[in-house]
Length: 304
Image (cartoon, rainbow, N blue to C red; front, side, top):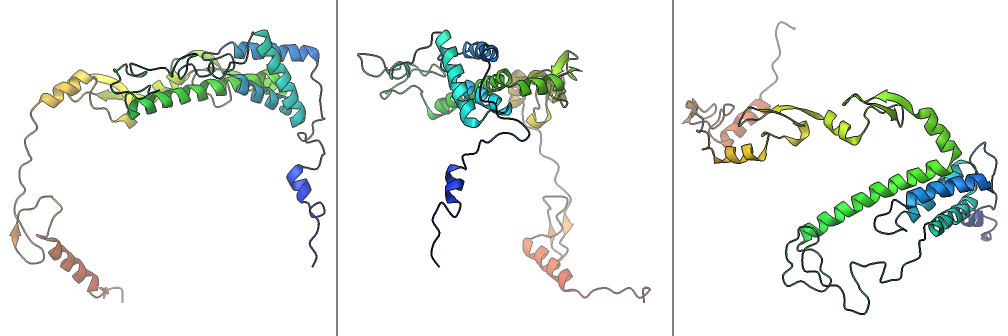
């Protein structure tokens, strides 16, 4: 049987698409952003971009993704939304005076002009002096490196996600309408403050209040003071001072030895280490278990 050409068996449509515009169900295609709405989205994007800490381009990707997603929610085709998001974010960057950095300016912690790579004297995380440091070394150990990287990545995820959500809300009329419908006045279950809930399941006004709700009263086993802590942490002391003082105390006396017992298999007298030990050795316990396993089943005569 002869093979069919790719454009006849559906591969071309699968690989490159059918050329038909893809829109959300029930929404007409919209390919033009009105000037007034464009200015509104640009102003909101400028506000997001001005919250940068490392570079003016820190939230460029998040704004591009957010504006594009917001326009797609309002019925724009993907390619049209991507083109408009590029124009809007580019205009916002131009208004705040952002210019593309050079290769050296993009990584100031590693290089500097007309000189060798920067030599770091102290660890960037703990401040410990670097001894026998290699070129470009910034941390004193792998522990400091992983801790600094974890904190940096956590911050980037947190601020980038917040910037992208803000960009979606600024670009999409549908997202703002849904947010307005879902936001309801609620009372925080932890502090009692009134806040606008992001959804109908919101119970706390902040992450701090949510964390406080997980804390339960505990009693310090050293000084007897009551303190608040999460049950999952397993804290026994109210402070580090109590923990240190408790370690200085002499260990408690060992429990009194149990009374001697007679082995249930061989009849030997032995000293049990636990309350549930009834055989002197594992062999005796194994023989008793095997005997009970091989014993015939008991048939009650009353049942007959």
